[in-house]
Length: 213
Image 1 (tube, rainbow, N blue to C red):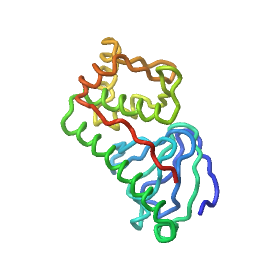
Image 2 (image 1 turned 135 degrees about the vertical axis):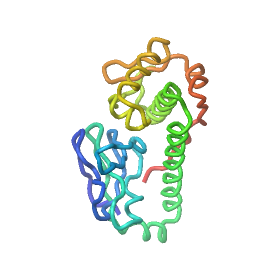
Image 3 (image 1 turned 90 degrees about the vertical axis):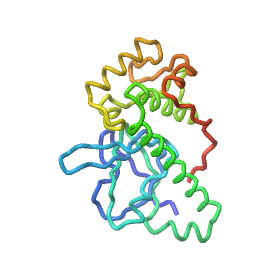
Image 4 (image 1 turned 60 degrees about the horizontal axis):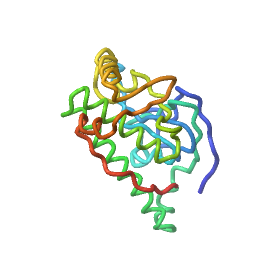
């Protein structure tokens, strides 16, 4: 069902909020994020996308895209036609289950973010997200020793966690002064993981081997 591969430069639009229902993608390389923009320009980042993530299912079920996707880094995607889902479920039920698994997994990530925005303190929110992204990057063999790539800016963290930019900056500096994290030259290193998890009240399960579409 694959029709092509497509490439997007960092900071370019992969899917535009408000567009008509479009193609489906699997992210092959790079980092991206899914977001929703309010009329006055305020942005809520819903989740971050790493290689293997399935892109576009939400919009495929509707007439128009309610969310957008933007590339954090240069990205490459595998392209599937918009009408591929039903034939895939009908002819390849095991792949249909994999799509369901990926969507359920994404929902769990959005649920975790909702708990953070609704109930965690700023320190807990930032710590939780950094732990989660570090685990995901390690599971994809992106780690170099104890560090992983970290292309997010403070603006991205603020928009994902419902914090002001000033509060985000202050929180990151506090975590670094506590020896919990190190952010330098676009890479993230965590300090004592158990202490950071206790601080975030976040003891996420080990990431499972995920199916790839």
